[in-house]
Length: 267
Image (cartoon, rainbow, N blue to C red; front, side, top):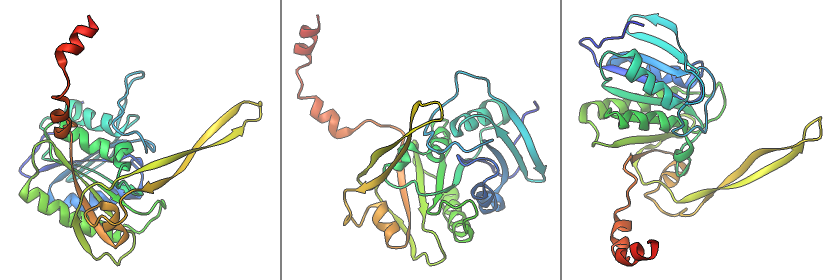
């Protein structure tokens, strides 16, 4: 496969976790296309909830599905992180100027970003030294109205393309559904958890199986700095996410441990 080379325009890599045919990814292509040449590498089917999973047990395929001036679209049987890896290591002759992932059908606020294939694709970009943004719309319908999301994604992308991002940081952008968005807020990730529930059923052969269900439990509902608070009040939330998971406070706490004693106990 002949590698794609960057020309005088920035090369923008687009991926998602809802699949190459999803309305959201085509909305994101529309949002960023004015700023460079776009190469899309996206899963050939929905890969929601894949987080940063990579494929190691079966082969990956890469197929071109569309080409026109300034736009090439490929699909793969891999995860969003696989798609970025394939683009960087197989498809592109040069590192892209930017990775954008989405626009996801449904929220990726608070701790959902840890499960999100959308953010997994963006994070893989950052691990390769490429600035990245994950975009999500708070609507799950396949035919959701992305018109407002396109405008906000384009405006945020343009600003970040001009200003850059700190090393090791991607943005998690969530956009309220509908046209009555009040504005944009820089936020923290809200505290909360998914309360897991499993719906137990029995298949026609008598074997038990389970469907994962549940609900989100918000733990800091009055924190005006949180992404959940911003979204609940009609604002786009923008959360900077670091790929370095080291906790500085944890380092200080661990210094109180007696490492010599631990080593002696382990001998």
